[in-house]
Length: 151
Image (cartoon, rainbow, N blue to C red; front, top):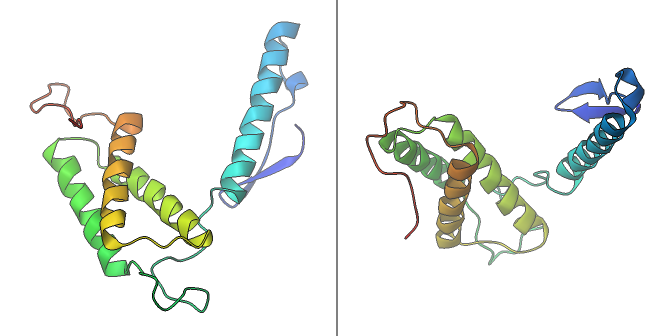
């Protein structure tokens, strides 16, 4: 656990279990948790990272493959802000939504699966729903509108 972990451009050292004076059970659980976090960070940086710019056509993309333009991505982002504002959710949800969406589309493109505009819209709705459920909180404590649900 003493090796350095690169996190968002900064170098961080994962704490050692012996850095804390704890009993053996807590120390073991802490060490296990640190190890799990380290593995998840590694997976995020390698397996789930956005590798390609899916909004631009390059030599690796077949001619007949659909390409989602930057303008189309921007429209989806603006739509997500409208939805979040309508239901009075925290606007940070849109950032998480676009993160999920970019990762999904990038991962698909890297595997040779190119999605259409309709599939992009569907993925955006799913990502917004997931982000709302994972991160969602209303800006006001009184819920004026019903929660966002799929029926």
